[in-house]
Image: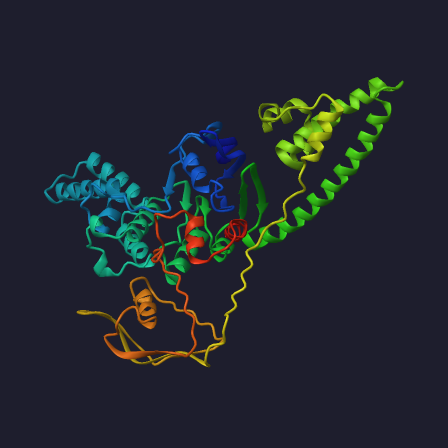
Length: 474
């Protein structure tokens, strides 16, 4: 049974169409990863599917009785009016259980005081069975497991919610959703604020999740381990793939190759039909040529509006269903003359090859063999030491990864190594002829008043067209 069904959803803001023609369904127990280019509208779609926003067109049907849970990408504004601690917020998930627990204690006290009525024993037995079935005897254990799994140290459990960072609030909200166990859990970048250990714990939790999942993530390894279907979103619709992310990449390449062949076949079909139309429009076969013109015009308009899938639907289900589904005549015009049709044919584009980001990181000069060395290094802030580092050495062409739990001091270590912070003791030695680049976590170094293009041009003097092409790669 489908818990959620989306049919031909479109979203526009003013004259700008964010996306259109998005359809899909999530069955009970389905685990779906939503992928697509940045800015294509994935977060907007999640808000629509979660019932938090209205689409410009199309509809969403949620099966009766389905409980939804939604995790936003950032939850900095969450819990604004609450003074709960982290642990107390988790406990609120089980308010009904706690009420039942209080009722059980009250009944037990009545029994101790001598009330041995059959009605009391029957009520107690029924309530106890319900309480046990709902996990009443282990809910506090589950809270501790979730908080620990998401990287909260025990001393953090008593922190008031308003005192938490945005990332910590997002983790609290994720923890609460996991404890609530909704039928459909919708998550927008759930791993953003998790360290490696917490991501691995979450993967294990979601693998055994009995409900359905819809998740947006840029972590391909997370998607590989968690989801069983991929929805690939673009401006003009959604493509569906079975399997995890790695399976999707292979299928997408195979599908593109098939689409290229189908496009070439369609071009040959166009050439053949146009040749007949031109030769016979004014001859004895005028009526046949006009019929071919009408059919070909519909085919070309369908492909221009909905791509090759629209042509397949046109051939299998006819014009009316295809026009209704893709909104062909709403967004386009079917040619009625040879010249109009020729113009539309000239505007057809072949299927776009799946893109991959290609980076070439070359240094303008060769550095010394030693890149970085530390000695007796302790990092942190005055009065707040974070950790002592073993003596380390990084040499030319080596590539090192720095990992550790949230709050351990990884960013502080980098800033210390780059001489942006003073070490508490010890020293960091940087090698000769180094050209340093630092990509900060919180966009430090960017002028937030600039446009994206201006920020790049302030850093490197490039022709406008070259700068735009470079930015398009990201």
